[in-house]
Image (tube, one colour):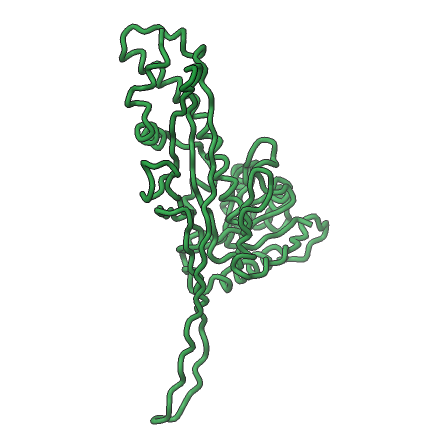
Length: 342
């Protein structure tokens, strides 16, 4: 029978648990799988972010030999932002492991490690869901907590106005010819101008994260359907215009974003669309701070940390806990555009 004393093994030290948990496969998530966020590992709980308002200006011509025009100094704004703490634990009571038969100390250890790992996997899934919620907030410019309260509003932090939501008029029974294509071009131009030199021709593009109703309406729009029907890609109407699929139209990649099954915890409003610039260097970043535990003080931050808490008084339970200290942010929120179907 397994004993609580087995947790004194080095396999359950904070360093060993952290190493093991960072090797686990992460819960699949759309924005996470895109590799959209550049990872920065910092050694402090505060992250310094610099905003440089680089501008282009016309140079007035002048006569040879006369004084030349003086360039204005580039305005810079450096601010500190604090990473958030995500933490959760799961208590393993003695009764949970007491019936694990000890054929040998090594087998007993492996059985208990499996039990602990099962508990940690559940917590890691929740952490990954929390990360996805923060990513989804960052690509919209406002990162929110589990209770929907605001952690960081990047429009406010950078002093820029949030772009007005555009009505795509997808419920119009008699839409104007080329209306959707025109909106695609207008949206892309607005994003390109907001990003300036960060937009890379041939590499950067817009990804449209669509709610269910918006996606259904745009795939059924006469203009979109007619475009595909007149090409060899007509099969895409059957294959790629289905639920939670993606297709490309008007230079924009349209995705029916799938969040949580309740379509509210982590989701795009069913009647909305959020435009995310892809292939833009430094636009989206995530910084990870080190754990608050002594062994990791002033070390580069990891995505996850795990530790074991013991019932030292009675030895009735042990408690694996998982921690993460991220800061998801957008450096140019003025390029984060949005729309609605009606």
